[in-house]
Length: 272
Image (cartoon, rainbow, N blue to C red; front, side):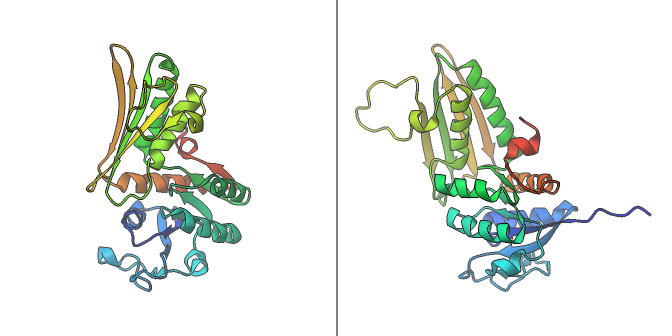
């Protein structure tokens, strides 16, 4: 009789939020992953409740604010929270040897360096967007940017729900970074994030960003390459957060065979 492979034990940070619920649902439906911990802030009214109660099910895993308790049975933590929360989780994971999938955005440069340093001890996948489709789009943008490096103005337009707290989105910034690197520019020096009043003619070396916030838009991203006589638009639209959850589990499975190092979704998907 064939033995079944052991399930990957996954903890979820921000377990009672929209993304946390999607992750828990995806873990339960996966067949090869097991919910091993559910973290949330101490002020959450769900502390002590079963993490799958929102599904009308019992997982046997309580929602907790105690990092040690929430991580003690986990091999991987999936984190889509906020930078300050993720940094606290990072320290606990590094101390406990728990790998991390980080989908949080809005990190400062010092925080990014701290994450890279932690990757000397634990394996981490960090990406501003875990969607498989978005990461294939990033690869297409890399190819397009190299072919359209001169004679085309580049604009990145993104739209998200009213509750999103950072702008531009981490995905939009990643798109800008991929494009800038492909054409030999530094995004920090060529990005334009706001236009108002008499701005003068557009500098052809810049990459422009526009952010829209409203309603329940999950996430839309368009990169416009505007030339003379033609324009090319590459667009990705998300209609559900399930794509992020599925991509996160793919990243968690990727980490199962790695002890340390900092990776992104290009590594997970073999797009290098």
